[in-house]
Image (cartoon, rainbow, N blue to C red; front, top):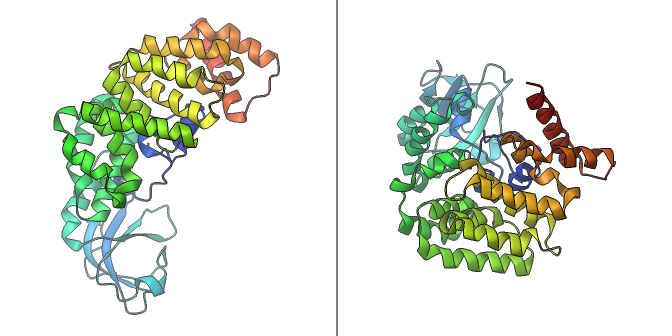
Length: 349
């Protein structure tokens, strides 16, 4: 599940409008405000206390770069309303890159957390990682999702939510299902529910399957697709191919289902197709094949994944669809055209 994907991304990626390695199901509609990537990319980051007017900032800890402690930052700081930050007793995390005109305030964090922030800032940029590096990356951040320091927990959540689903699956031996269930029911952690759902499914926590299925059925009654992607993904992990059958019957073949509901189902199937583990990719392709037979006008929902997997059998049908000038949303049309172009390139080799 780089965060890069912000996100009603479950829908965006299911529509095939973006290329990304992130697991969109974990992101669940949230806009990520801070992750380790901001620290890894930027040239300078510090913890600084504002003056009594909230207009200048004295550095108390250097996280990255050459801005030494006791340096006074007089340049403009974005997201630093003087009325809200003046006389703050908790340092603010300020980040700046050489290409930025200003420092940016990402919010308060206890100065005692400076060593953890330095550790995060030293991580490899995820855009530069190969698949073999991802398991170690997510393993490093996992212990921090329960940090009592909100900034640290938020960063850890963002990094895990932005990881490929295959990398998250590598965490299974490290996951505590009981702790995850507790976090999932904590209303103060509601924004992190998609990640907790995904990790609970990966943990093999069959005890939560009944809860997940109940939530899926409640979502169907209320037409609320907010967490459907993660819930589907968790059930696919727990139940395997038999749950693909259930999704086909109740969503992919049901004309009453809304586009967001279909997108959530397809997004979850796509992530499992990428992993090719709990649910074999060939089973996902078969589900997409059946879906396309009845929904050719919505081919864009699955075209990106089929192209990524080099399943070129759909080229004639997609070419016919484009030639017919059928009305398609822009993102779906681009996904179908991209599939056709890639299939022609593959055939020409």
